[in-house]
Amino acid sequence: MTPLSNQQRLHLINSQQLYENFQVALRHARSHRYGMRWKRIRNVEYLFRGADRFGRGKLLGRRSPETERILAAFQEGKTLAEDRVRAIRTQLDEQARLNRALRIARVPRVIGRILREIDAAGLSSAFTVLGTQAMYAYESEGGVPFLLELLASGDVDPLFDPRSKITLVSKKLDGAGLLGLLRKADRSFECIRKRGFRAANAGQFMVDLIVPPRSMQDGEPITFASDDLVAAEVPGLQWLINAPKLETCAISDDGWPAPFRVPDPRAFAMHKAWLAAQPDREPLKKPRDLAQAKAVTALVTEYMPHLPFDETMTSLHGDVRALRSVLGV
Image 1 (cartoon, rainbow, N blue to C red):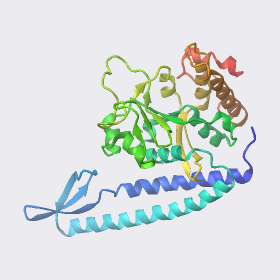
Image 2 (image 1 turned 120 degrees about the vertical axis):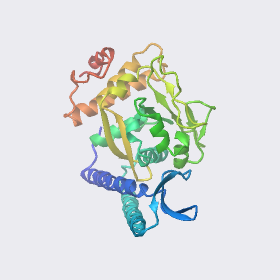
Image 3 (image 1 turned 180 degrees about the horizontal axis):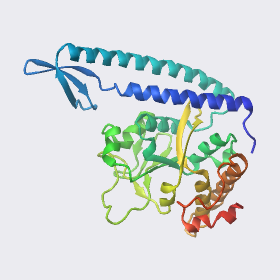
Image 4 (image 1 turned 90 degrees about the vertical axis):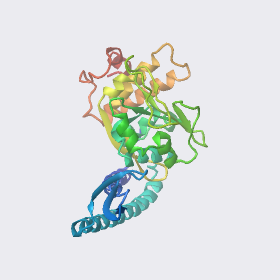
């Protein structure tokens, strides 16, 4: 494991800070996205504030000097917000060229685009990236790249937290569902099966919507729109839902930051070790699971000393915590 050089670290930090500014600017601009205009009702003009892409919204009052001032302030704020987004986007494009030249752009482009769309929709706290792709976040946070053979994967698994309000998530997705969001990242995404949990793009990169097992009382399927993905329940994920989360930015291969929300790396390592020990786990995946678990453990132990492997990881099942000995911690 070879750490990033000081120059690489500098530009990674610069990219992360620049993207934080971009997130703030983008949220401000998106607060203006549905517009404000005059609406005539029974020959009376009212100031109307849009609330969604379907034309719904609310009336703010009859036309008057006061509502005209409100509209003028809104339009000025919208212009300033859009100008700020454009200015920071230009800086990010310049930084992206440096990131590619310095070889710190490692996250597959499609993943970076998907994660930026999730973040732009205000849904970062509702989805956690699991599996192999989470390792990009760990190597970025630790400043030490993993071997590419440990990172190669043709899919990403966004874990939806079922404690989030589905109606709120659907609203933030503008009624187009998760599939609609994926199509903003890549127009070729399609559901593999109607009412299935998996979508794939033209390059056969797959996105699986998953949730931990739920109680028998939760019979309603988790989906965000008609003809959208329907979440599949996967055993053994309740621990990762409850584990602490790490939020960071890695760099996608277009040079742009990709915002990750992933399980605590200690939880990831122990969960991967647990998967490798399951008798029904596919034999081809077991050695890779264990290799990934050991690689993340080594990264945490050597480069993240502020994250000790101790008994404070109470969110993990006892059978998982018992695997610490397999990882040598």
